Image (cartoon, rainbow, N blue to C red; front, side, top):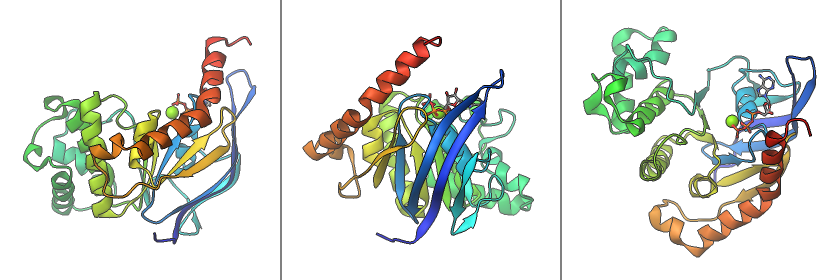
Length: 268
Ligand SMILES: Nc1ncnc2c1ncn2[C@@H]1O[C@H](COP(=O)(O)OP(=O)(O)OP(=O)(O)O)[C@@H](O)[C@H]1O
Ligand SMILES: [Mg+2]
């Protein structure tokens, strides 16, 4: 594995101030590094701070303390070398597929023809070149999420942040998307930090899984997934795979249950 560090999260903690002025500590002392080209998945109970951590990495919010470095440099503004793929696809309904993929390039002032050419390359990569002139409402959920991925890739980021991007998809489409993503990851060599609630998805995609504790989220454990690449659906049937999933569940089960009870009983 290439050991050059791409992303470094250095002593990051975060405290939100709620509407009533109360402080809520969400992340505590997060320290880890992701190598260039590595695929890391992030799991943890609801409310453990996963989305907050991704937003801090993309500089959408500033951490209360600590710093995020890409290639050894502090992240100065959203975008740049980082692209964020959200759970909902966020496509603009009045733009065609190709114009949606080129949207980030338009915002960056890339000339129109160059932007469309580049967008077409990434549409091709996600297997949707023939749908370039469709509108989002003419696509299935899985296709929309592929357009979303093409849009994130089109700005040619080094790092992809993905926040439960497949959560809204049916089970079969989700499995296909996981394999598509691994193929694209192999072809493009991106560094990926991917949030999911589904532990089998976390194991299937990852070089390493980072498990967060309940709020305030701190690193409970980092599990290296020693399963051969390229992976396919047979990987999920292997006993080693099942062992990793079970190990992760054992790690986070009590935190997930605790978070669940907290949410159900706000006055406790
Ligand atoms: N802007 C905000 N202001 C105040 N509190 C916030 C804000 N955003 C999130 N929180 C709180 O921070 C905690 C962590 O939220 P976050 O969205 O990071 O969790 P998460 O791990 O992504 O959860 P989920 O798995 O449900 O998506 C939650 O308790 C949430 O209510
Ligand atoms: Mg979240």
